[in-house]
Amino acid sequence: MRNLESRGYSEYISRVKKLKRPFLIGTVIFSVILICLFLFFKPSRRPNIILILVDALRADHVGAYGYERNTTPVLDRFARENVLFTRAVSASNWTPVSIASMFTGLYATSHGMVPPARDHGTARFLSVRLGQKFDTLAEILKRGRYQTAAVITNSWLKKEFNYVQGFDTYESMVHRTANAVTESAARILTKLQKKKTPFFLYLHYLDPHNPYEPPPPYNRLFQGPLRNGRYSTDIEKKLSLYDGEIRFADMKIGKFFEELRKRNLYEDAFIIVIADHGEQFRERGHQGHGDRLYAEEIHIPLIIKSGESPHEVRETVSNIDIYSTILKAVRLAIPENTPSIPLQDERRLRKRTGVMSESFQAFHYKSIMTVDGKKLIMDFGSPYKPEYLSLPVEKIMTGAKVVGVFDLEKDPLEQTPLNDERLERDLRGRLEKELSWAMSLRKRAQKGKISAKTLEELKSLGYLK
Image (cartoon, rainbow, N blue to C red; front, side, top):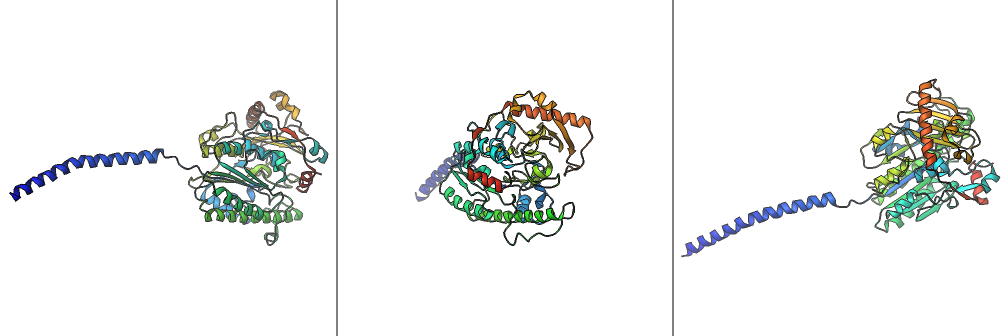
């Protein structure tokens, strides 16, 4: 009897196990499907965006671009670990125009943020502010639920010029050194981290800008002539101080990176390091910037930490592309009718007509550079007057004179103009096309007055007489 009961119990258990097996298999399959769906569709956290700009930093004074002095050990390492753009150019050769292009994704002809400089009286009464009609980078990010903050040190970016659009926090530290910027950035990070939403932080380091006054020991770090030997003794001294300023700013950027790592913010952040323009040391007879559109004034460093494996991008790109690059990185819609191309989109970069740059101070120049480094510079007459934009583009181009045609692959310093009529015609056509498009997107900047204090600050930076 006991054996029969035992046998019956065993058969019962066996039947139960047979019933449970498909159930367990089904449960496992269902669970795997749920996990896959979660991994595929789960909303990934949007990255924090950090945009670091070093004012007046020309590319060929950065180690990663082949400079002979050890000016940028921090940025050189950053470049080795991330994406280095070897041929990045600025849309203009001075701060207010260049930053407006970076914040709007438009050329100067379109955004019109070209304040008068050089003359004190004209600057005071006929100045302009960045127009309210633009969808600035900070405004779009703010609408996309990003916290937005900036630390600025250049007088051209003060609130009275309206670059503040879209920023929750806008700390103006005019003419302060890199040490103050990094310390302020650390305080702002504490505030930003209290909220769970991602942030956009813009840091503007001024140090390499004239006047060149690096603190000790950076004021004595570099001495003597450079190997190329093409500078006067006076300029060599200025270059040594300029390089000392770069090294000091580089060190403080390194301190900021350390702060990010300490807060566990570095690894997942989307970080861009760039300059607004370069600096001339009498290569064309001028000291400073805002003069012409040769490499020393518009070839800028550009390094991006985006999660991609380290590599170099040799195609020509512009600082206007920062606008769409950041918006694409955070999955926000890029406004239509912008010449700004996301740097993630290599196919579109290779197909673009060219990259335009514009100068409006001592010379009214425009240049176009193709993706493979062919470049045309043209003189549109001086001084620049906004009324010329009411003329047909064909008439504007007819009155312009060719300054030079260059091949930057063979002549990166633009020392030897080419005598190539076919290339010149091709580049003129490309420039006319870009200028015509820029004119069709034109929006007027707002009129504004500069305060007496700001005028004095701009004078100390060499902009006003």
